[in-house]
Image 1 (spheres, helix red, strand yellow):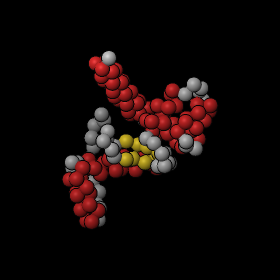
Image 2 (spheres, rainbow, N blue to C red):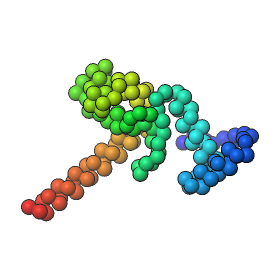
Image 3 (cartoon, rainbow, N blue to C red):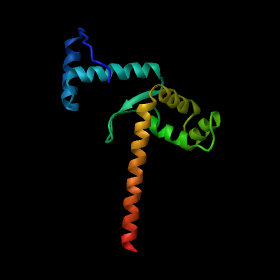
Image 4 (tube, helix red, strand yellow):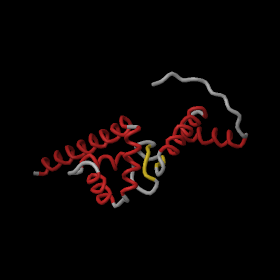
Length: 141
């Protein structure tokens, strides 16, 4: 993780009040929350069509009108083809326009390690769930 540097900014008092309330709700201090919003805002500017959402697994990037980026990339990596054919396959499989898949690919190219962690975590959870199911089925036999 890169070294932190200090940054000072003047903001409207109402913005800071909302930041403090939201930070308290999220369990983050206002500096960390402001850093998250700035980082995500720049990522959104750099990658049109990408948004950030909260959920049980944590905060993650996704398509504004579609699934999370890691889900798109997981399908893309499993596509039987490569290149443009893989984009078209993924778009068809997920019922997305090809531009949505390209937005996810663009984000993935910039944040490969982050998205690969999401894919690996999901794969591990799916394997654990399948193993538990198989044990249950064996116990019933």
